[in-house]
Image 1 (cartoon, rainbow, N blue to C red):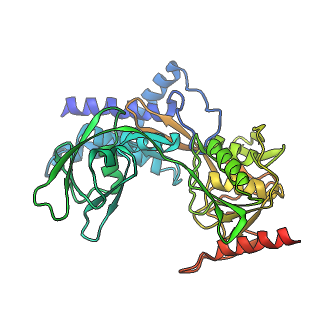
Image 2: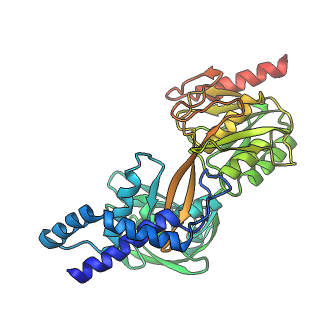
Image 3: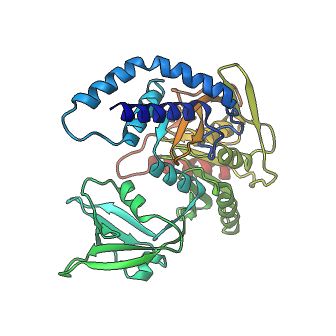
Length: 402
């Protein structure tokens, strides 16, 4: 027991030090551009000694569980992760959290806008089966996967019915160019089929667009999240809409939970000629100003931004900046109100700690955390009818007729 406790002590202290002194960060999930540097090793050593002395109550509980628990002991890594999760949760902030390696990798991939995958959607039917739907021209379709195939195993390992779609996706994704073996049950085929699919780079666009049939002069752009590629995709959308005759614009940020801070600044900058996009305020009272960055400007078309209760974080930065600066009108429902900034510290095993380090404030000084943004036009969604979209079309059509 002494050896196990010694090893666990070392693991826990190391994990704690990683939390406090993690060297740098790799991604910015609605984060600022300047992470505080890691403390010097001598300070870390002193901290370790002090923390070890303060853990006596923790080790008291540890020894009881180690000695008396009836059943299999969890792995050392599981206990270490549990300790870090508990530490993060003790701060009482839903955005300060510990993320294990696999979900952290998916987070990186999602924010990069591309990953190594097979190019298929996965859904769950009423019986709990994982149902495949290959994307046209992507590896899954090319390898012979058909819409409606039931996924029953990955790399020879049967799927646990309790696995979520995200967990199944994590099993399938992997290095580009390497095959992954899928076992599928095809309706009306007696025996399961084993199909090897070679992973390719799969890009996940964050921007979709079209000219509205009911109002050909109105371009519609939906942004699902703010990734490394969003501003570039937005440029392409605006260019194509202009070529198709659009002279007014609806930007749909509904159900957009956020993304990268820099991406949101770049998107807002497409619609502003200069000035402030947001302020970032830290506990110390220090304030950082983020200004318009891009030299590339979208046409000065009349614009309405659609928002709802799931419009949060980076999407609120864009909506708040364009509202405060008088560039666009918000229409829909009160936004979520996530006005905090997180730094993402990547730890040595691929896991990470997300730490709330600041609040952000709109150009006119509004702190929206827990409050959200108030649209100029409150228009709730109606079952069977997209009332906010229809009202936005009406608003822009009336303006074009003035």
